[in-house]
Image (tube, rainbow, N blue to C red; front, side):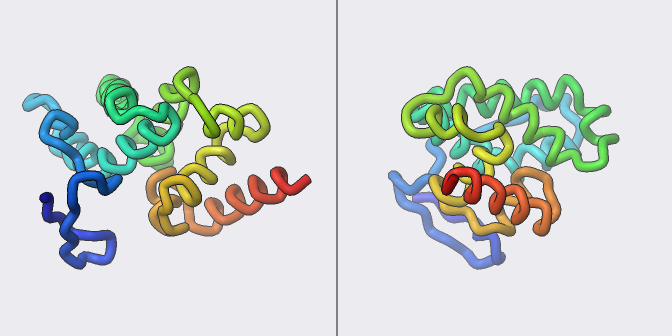
Length: 159
């Protein structure tokens, strides 16, 4: 069992099998030489990045590898990422690109018919069950921009 603070600050108890439950071998420990800002970024974003990797690769192990690889790329580009208009958006773009070749199952079909970021929005909201606020934070977008992206994706699928 793992205790952590939920998005609203409330304490949540997670059981094995819950999508946010991360086993010790799946946790992320940034390098000890990493800047504090990067370490904090990793701790904040790891659970969603891991779940996203798992969702698109249909594998917890591969999902963890994808999330780690993306965060290693973020580390290599940290000064640039931190200096961008939105560090979370720059990092999300790296994660999304890292996952591109590993998409399997229903996720792969979704990405064949929609632009990458629109499909990402649908995965976050509908496969992972994130709220619009949580999904917009994960992608580094303003809430209104995320809603527009998500709405465009839904409309595209209906056509």
